[in-house]
Length: 192
Length: 426
Image 1 (cartoon, each protein chain N blue to C red):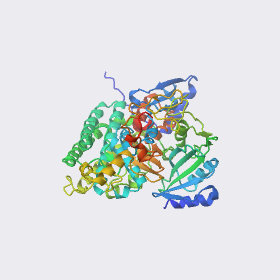
Image 2 (image 1 turned 45 degrees about the vertical axis):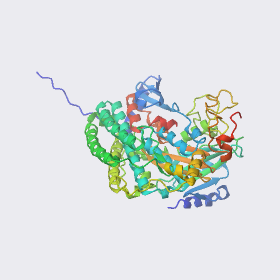
Image 3 (image 1 turned 30 degrees about the vertical axis):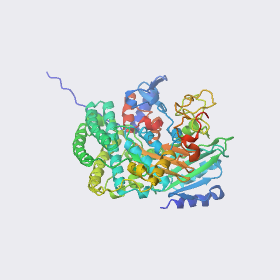
Image 4 (image 1 turned 90 degrees about the vertical axis):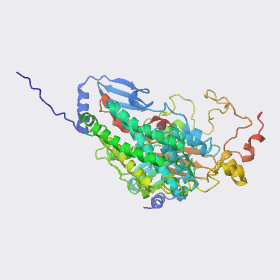
């Protein structure tokens, strides 16, 4: 079965709440306008569209944009082989959305991980504790404003925040972000 | 007078009866529970898994797995480097099958680039071969450690002898035994060395014999069967609900294998079967892994026959996609030609340009479905790279699986789930 079909059915059922399905590299993505309705959408997807398997939940930090968080659900039907990605935005002030643990039990650890790494809370999750970091750790490390090891930071108590040995040196390139000219090692002043 | 010893059959109650019996015993006991902290460094936890067990006598009443002792922040690291630079980090996910991780990651990035269908056939065959060798290697370690935890140390010695040969093959093809980093985006590091295919064939022959020996030691061994059967039963529904993947999902009777259901590389051209279990207990998961190794041997045998260009590639079949914006040019050309020099410079400093968009690619790894979710905003660095790690998800079922079991069953269940913490904690 074509994966576009269930996405269409979802759109039919929920109307404006669901965006037009977008296809990229053969994968179908729909966007849910209101994160509060995620449980309804997922329940419908599981019971009526046979998406019985939750592959993964990821989260994206759109740092500098509003709303800041995007939560991504990867659904799969083991019976029909269909796949669907549902995305939904959550604002930084709220940083909370309902848990889908009642739909798929596997959501338990995924949601704990997202809470641990990004600091997005899942309402009515029975056991929302940190999972990879330890209890009492003050930061959410996957946020874009949290520094990578070796990058200087103003945040207190972050380990390994001293500049890396060759950081800023004449032969160190910086991957990504800036244009090729700005990253060209010779053009940068090591004193900066 | 000679005293006759009576021979008693050992009765193995089914799992439901077992749980009921355990619950009965609990009601009789005085309400006093003990918390046992198992791990993080315990031989049966295969790494640094910690489980908080609440015990009533020897019966587990609650289990709370605690992961994260090996967390290195791979997803954060990935956001700060080019796609190619992340390949060595994938070695360190499931460090028992680094070659399979390399293949999985390369395929995910290629999907984002839209070039996964253009991979040269020889490259596809080489990738399938290394992935299947990695599967055998990972299953051998899982099985050896599993059997040792249950008390059959001989199996461990046998499986490690065979693993050693796979390491030699990995060393021959990639230069490293452990941290292979063999694949590149758009191809592989280099073609197979001379005699590599012949060595694989030799290995397959020897390995089939060793596998038979392991089989004789375990499959109908009374102690092994008694300890594994009807233990840690995962029903079909439960396996799907908990998102299990790989042999753990198939052990519960779900016929799902990404190599068949969402075929990638040259798997559609190859004949192999997907073994599934019937009851979903530890014994079924053991049987599924054994059969998977045999199927991998079958796949490797076909690859050796069908590999385009033959064993020595005299026809000079390419192993990389012919795209200078993705694959590094040959060094000779970099030194002598302008365009190749530019390509080399751009690829090294900036990385390949992955168009904005998001993809998810799941690869059938030895432990289950290793998936990479890549969110790109264009350029050479992923905006977000999420690793769907099968061990992490497989472990999440422990909290439901363990209550009602005896404490001596813990190593058996852990061995049958077959996880690796490097991947679970990322």
